[in-house]
Length: 99
Image (cartoon, rainbow, N blue to C red; front, top):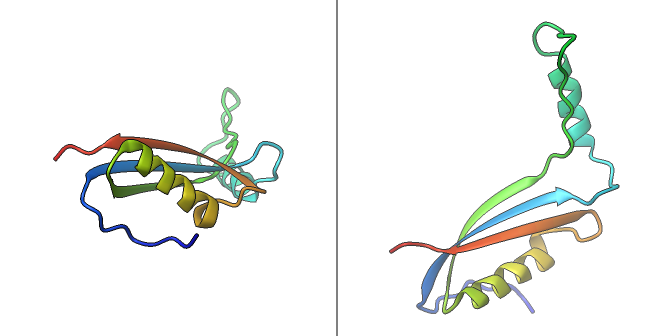
């Protein structure tokens, strides 16, 4: 099923999508950020920084008849385009947007 812009009148929902690497998958971005942060400022014996993962955050607006319809559409976008299920996992948060 191809993704298509929906034009039906309904409630506007704010969708937050957080995409992170799956556990056990190497995260070269997190490794690079950790390494770069270690080089910032004076070295401190009493603290260190270790970045566990680097992901993506998307904030979208969806207009749908119900929260369930917005959830279904958001999950379809994730499975068809936004998330690689072999390497990434995701979390969705959906809230009705105040008019």
